[in-house]
Image 1 (cartoon, helix red, strand yellow):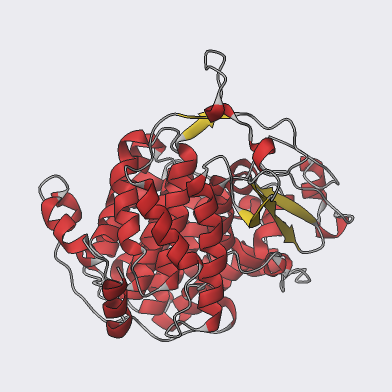
Image 2 (image 1 turned 120 degrees about the vertical axis):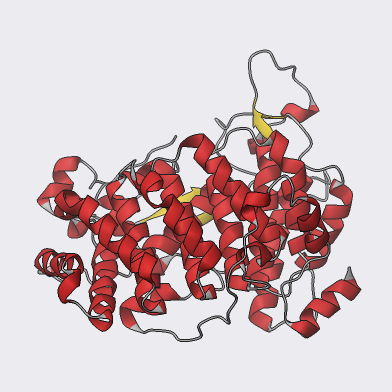
Amino acid sequence: MHDLRRQALESGKTVSRKAMSREASRATSRASSAHNSHSSSRNASRYPSDDEDLGSQSDDTAWSTASLDDLADNPDRGNDQWAEELADRVQEILDRKRSSVQGREESLSAYCRLSKYHFVADEIRSNISDLLAAFSRSVKYESSVRETTLALRALELLTVTSLDETIYENVEPLLTRTIRDSTSNSVKAAAIHCLGTCTFFGGAGEDGHLEQMTFFLDIVASDGQSIGAVDDAASVTAALQEWGFLATEIEDLEEESEEAVGIFIDQLDSSEPSVQIAAGENIALLYEKSYTPQEDDDDEGEDTQSDSDLNSSNNFDEPKLVKRYNAYHNTPELERQLQSLASISSKRINKKDRKSLHNNFTSILTTVENPRRGPMYSTAIDQDTNRHYGSKRTIKIGREGIMNIDRWWKWIRLASLRRILQGGFTEHYYQGNSAVLDSLPVMMRASAPLERHGSKRAKDRGRLRTWEADE
């Protein structure tokens, strides 16, 4: 493992140990996932202000902070004219015949900013189909990398805002073709994220989820080769993250678990922390899913110990979890790899990435060792009982409240919504966006009056109040 790791670090590639051989052996059963496409270098340009979404944050999946203050920092909150500005921008987007590439880029950038920082469901309701068509045209023609990427972001935000269940069937062929055939790796990565969002929120159903999970898994297994993005870390990371996001919605992954864990283990040898962390989180999710709540006909025993016994928690009503199957055939070897990453000390890795790897893989290892344990800040051993204990992950969102993240599926969904909505997360939450509310059945406890967020519309929905809820 160390020789392979050194080779990866020296080459700067995201290669993993067995991906190429596995891809060859899987070509017959999954031939539809391997298509010829143009390969190009990743677009290195970055756009300021509203275009921050064009880049990928290296710590999107990392436990690097205890607070998501960035999600509560809405720089557009004081914009009283946002609805009028949005209406103007929508008209500009729809009037393509009299627009230029630069003009469309600016209109799309403004739309992303406004629909991210405001819950615009009422304002765009009558234009959903037209906006869908306009965004799709910008993606299809790919006049510029910036226009295409912004159109993909706009499509994600439209999907999360409208919850229109026809979106997936309308855009899936286009997004799949873009992922395979675009000449820009940054467009491919953005399209992978967009496809994941449209699958989850756009009416795909379980069959659609499983189909796209297979597609994303092929991208990961081939290190991006199946879509013409060989060793592109952004594309592989996006595929890993979206696979995990969709997997949170699938109740039973017993048939998929062995192969998927094996593929994710290969990516633990990547030279890119973002790839390693996303792969590790998916492994933790699969181990977590191998345990389900105890049912009436289950026998009491060691495998029905409750989470509250293991996690030093005051939540005594948590369900007892029972092991249903083995997530992977060689857990001891996996634990050794995770332990190596949790304590990695290579000077080839910068201090920030090293700390991120330590924090993430300590938490991931904790779950693999006992899948009843969800994401934790830290773990320790009680010297008297020799049992592990730790504090559950609590995310503070600005001054408004907290989320207790006691399961990996909750963290993965929160991380996905964080990527999509960023500073607009709390606005969408308190304004009643069902995509956010229904995806995160966690407790949020408000610690300050929330009226400053709101309009009469929001108050009428009953979403603005100091509250506690458990699901």
